[in-house]
Structure formats: structure tokens, C-alpha cells
Image (cartoon, rainbow, N blue to C red; front, side, top):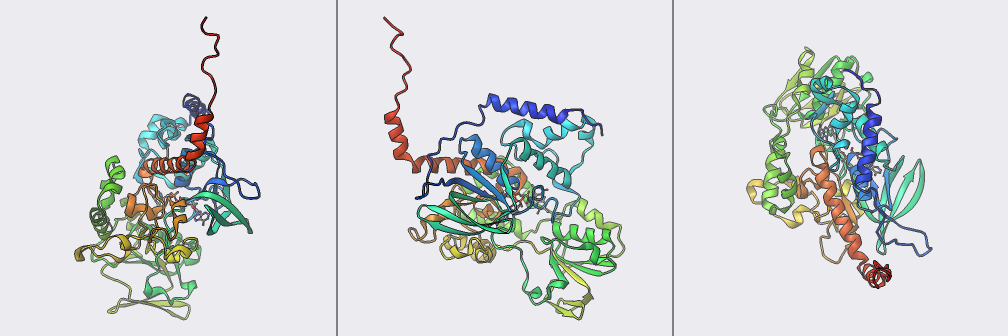
Length: 473
Ligand SMILES: Cc1cc2nc3c(=O)[nH]c(=O)nc-3n(C[C@H](O)[C@H](O)[C@H](O)COP(=O)(O)OP(=O)(O)OC[C@H]3O[C@@H](n4cnc5c(N)ncnc54)[C@H](O)[C@@H]3O)c2cc1C
């Protein structure tokens, strides 16, 4: 792997040059809004400084929507899962995925990589190491000067007149913030948190963790660990437990066979991302019902991490019906079999339940969900799909009863909860450019329409002459 001297600096020069060619950033054109006391209101507040939030921030600036703020509760460089809860060695996606480049070749992962290392290294790169992907995102933030304010958490939202009042926790201090539009780029656990199956609800907290938690794997050295689930997060957690020295690791899988397909891989193309939202409700439901029903296989590389360990065991057809504490250890029971051990890691994924999402829960009665909009035929009945929000064309929340909660359309979800309405254009890497473009298009149209009388007046008032009167005799 040969380093290129100054490669990244040259790339950054090229990007600055691209910006000059593109006349970036254009002036802000959005009509300002003031509070009654005269202080300005932010036009767009983005919560979440991960990939989606940053793409949205860059895209808004590029469209001349510049009065924006972007917050993330994590410290700088720890946004998203990459250096916190992700445990795979490399990304699942192929190295050619372009990242949140928003149409600029010089902003792609490949451009970033090849600016630093030679062609042989690029050819030899299999998949992108997880830490390297975060390095790329860090660079993306720096080169685009994305003004993420870290250590700021959104706790509550209150509609106030035609704006939103946000209650923030900023490095431990409460703060209020006013915004016209809110974009929740809050990741995967953004519409109900993580899923805790009923069987585990009475287990004391010292005996289990979810894969989304920070897990102290050192403390599991020499312990007998159960991991629930057969998807990527479960498999990678099992691998880290083994690599750190767990005495035994047992992967408890509900299905009779290990899932071997990732159906969603076949949906990574522009037509799917662009066209999905215009499909009728039944077709969208059928697609996701089938895709989620097939389960998503863990990546091959993750499964291979487990192969060498003789103290690793897979138990298929083993749904856990009950988990209970037994002193400092625990017992899991499937109904027909019981198992004793020390600790459980739940690779049980994310819940979809607005009532469990703190900042959205107060609006749960008013938000239109899929179950309010569509009743599936019996063969594809699916309670969880019904819990997804049914969103507008720019990812905005819609009202269950028109006229009851019109403020909802100021809240745009730009996270994984949009999947049922829009497909994976605001969650996974390949769709993010299309998603951000759609979000920004909607916001630009809304700001323009909301100030239509002012734009009309500007038009009437416009009096900058093209001709000065001295061009003819
Ligand atoms: C383990 C793992 C591996 C993945 N691998 C791949 C892959 O290989 N290929 C692929 O295409 N996709 C992959 N994904 C999916 C997707 O690319 C990632 O989830 C990606 O991080 C999504 O970016 P995001 O900006 O939507 O969310 P995130 O990166 O999760 O960013 C959301 C941010 O919102 C912040 N936040 C949330 N709530 C608040 C709040 N109330 N106040 C303030 N800040 C808040 C969080 O701190 C976080 O930084 C993977 C996901 C995971 C979890």
C-alpha cells in the first residue's frame, strides 16, 4: 500500500475548483423569519450529524438554503454506528459504492481513497474497513465545512405558531431553539428504539445488552454468552465475544435455517430508489413484507469470523420463550429446552413504534401510520409494517385527520423509518444521494411557496436596469 504524497491536499484543491465551477455556495434566497422579539428563526434544523444529516446539510447549502443548524448528541467523530456499536471488520457494501457524494465525483469514497493510495492498493482493497469508512465521513465533514454541533441532543419538540420549538440538551444544559423545519436524520433506532422481545423483559439489566448498546466484552472473558438472532449485528457481536475470550458463545436462532440471502441487495438501483414511493400501497407492502420475512443474511465475512472457534455453537429453531435470572447467571428456555449461562446479547433489531420514540411520542395519536392508510390482505398481514409512518413526498409526517395537527408537515424524517414509504433512500449508503435530493427539493419548494406573496412583491419591485439608456442614440 503506497501512500501518495499530498494526494488528499490535491483532491481538496480539485473540490474547491469544482465549487468554483458550480458557483457554490449560492447566496441564501429563503425569506428570513423572526420571532416576535426580533431574534431570527433557523430555517432548517437537522438532528443527526451522520451520513444522512451531512448529505442533507451539504445539499441544502448547495441550493442556497443556508440558515441551517445541525446537531448531534455524540462527540465529534463518533456520529453513527461506525466507531461505537458496529462490530464488523468491513462494510457489507462493495468498495465501489459512491458515498454521499451528491453527484460530485471528487467527493466519492473512491476519490478519497485513491487520492491517498496507489492503484494496486485500490485493486487489492476487498471491502471497506469500518474505521476507514468513518475516516472518510470525517474528511467529508471537514472538506465541506459541515457545521455539526456535537454534544447537543434533541429531547422534545413543541409546535408554536407556524414554527417549532425544540428543547435541546447541550453539554448537560437545557436550551430552547426555534426552527421552521426539522429534519430528523437520527439513524436506525429512530422510530421506537431497539426491540426487546417480551421473553427478556423481566431479565435484570446486568444480565443482558442489546447489540445497539456499548458492550463491555472484556467483562465477558471466560463467560458463557448467548447471542439472540441470526443477522449481521448478532453474528458480529458473537465474533467479538469469541475474539475477546468468552468461554462459549451460543447463537440462538429462531429460524429453522440460517438465512442465506439478502433480498434487498437486488433493490440497489436507481429505478427502485426513485420509483418505489410511487408504487401503490399494496405493492410496496408486498415488497417489504417479503424482504423482511426472508430475513437478511449476515455477510459471509462475518460468518467466517466464527468458523475457527470450537467454543461457538449455533442453535437453530430455538426461539426463546422465557429468560430468567438465576442468581448471577441466567436461564433461557425455548419451552422444550433450557440453557444456563452468564450473559445474553440481543441482536433483535429495531422496534417500529412511535409511542416509544421520546421526541415523537407526544404526537403519536396524530401521525398517519401505514395501518391507518392501508389494510393488507390476510396473506400479507404484518403488524410491524403497519406501525411505520406513512410519509409525504419529502419525508414529512402527515396528519391522521386532516386539519388536526398541521404542524406535522414541518417535521421531516430522514432516517430508517422512511423505508416503507420511500425505500432505503435515507438509511443505507447507496440510496442516500437520491434521498437527500428528494428532501431538498421538497424543502426548497415549501420555502418558496410559503413566501409566495413576498416573492411576488420582489418581482414587482425589481428595478435593476439591463440597459442604462446610453446604449443607443
Ligand atoms: C452495524 C451497521 C453496519 C452497517 N453497514 C452498512 C453497509 O455496509 N452498507 C450500507 O449501505 N449501510 C450500512 N448500514 C446502514 C447505514 O449505512 C448506517 O446505519 C448509517 O450510519 C446511516 O446513516 P444515518 O446518517 O442515517 O444514521 P447514523 O449514522 O446512525 O447517524 C444518526 C445520528 O443521529 C444522532 N442522533 C440520534 N438521535 C439524536 C437526538 N435525539 N439528538 C441528537 N442527535 C441524535 C446520533 O448520535 C447519530 O450520530 C449499517 C448500519 C449499521 C448499524
